[in-house]
Length: 331
Image 1: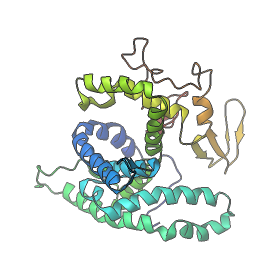
Image 2: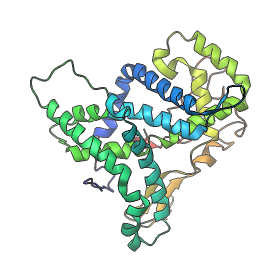
Image 3: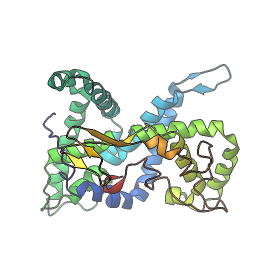
Image 4: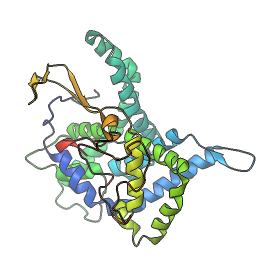
């Protein structure tokens, strides 16, 4: 697709992407907070200004489209850098790409495999979004790789984005091409918009449904000694978001895996090549065996008995909270 290859093997990308996401990106989060604040404030202000207002001046916004645009702009800054995150054409393609891909994948499940190569380009709107993304990303990655090999490059020029993190992590042993870097970044991008946007929508909805938590959250924000440490210093907000996501996951199943060769589990369950395996995400996170009074919203559920510290964090993965995946491939 647009010069990019598709790999079915889970280990085809080595460990670079895990190192970038789990270590390098996290180490730069403090540097990204200020520009993220700016771009989120900018997009939100634009959304409010463009919204229809009622007779008393209240602006009415559709929450999910707004959330997707906010998340797309914010994640674009982190993934692709400041210049592309402010490019309207690029942002439009970045928003359309995962939606086109998700819809196409679902439709292709019901189409005979022999027709899939013919149907896919039409379902993906002739790859319009991916073509725009690749056209912007390929020369940028090529230039970053070229600069990384210069011995006399300017140390004052720093790029805090995932493109640069992949370039810096690209060792002589791995030696990823520009095409490989773009392919992996777009693969990660596909998973980076939908779930955060839905989590934001449901959190706003739960905030309206359970107004008794509003004052508690305000007090936590006002009394926080440092907002620069993120949700680590805001255990109630973190617990509120996690509880909202627990009751409203983006899908009823997760961790979908296509079986490439026959496999037998330890209990004797057999899977044939071509089968799909997954876990019942929603059922697990609403199971009363894992959560007391599991269908009730409790913003303090993931805090200690004093309501002061985390018991578990929103970003933690476990067999009872597999929202972000499981095992070494969880992000």
